[in-house]
Amino acid sequence: MCRSIKTLRAPVTPDPQEADIQAAALQYVRKVSGFRAPAAHNREAFDEAVEAVATATRELLGSLVVRGAHAAPHEHPHDHEHEHAHPHERAHAAGAPA
Image 1 (cartoon, rainbow, N blue to C red):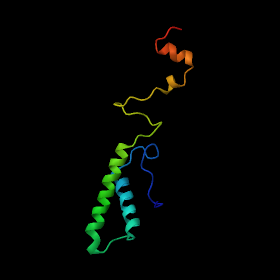
Image 2: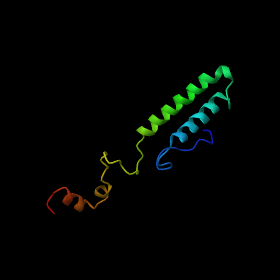
Image 3: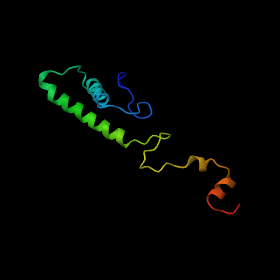
Image 4: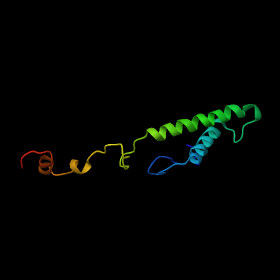
């Protein structure tokens, strides 16, 4: 991977900005194309590729589920405390007689 592209997913970057996404997309297209700045006859293709990569990046970041990250208010997090409880405590929490 290109060294100047930083990780944009949480928790490494909790709230990536549009500028971060555009910079990563630009670096990716530069690396793949081999051009730091394209010639005039390649400018349109270059710019379209940057936007396509930025769009894919936004979609990817919006779809990722990171284990251990705090759940959004609409999500239902897994109850890890219950999972690690002693079997007797789990049975009691589930309503079984003690």
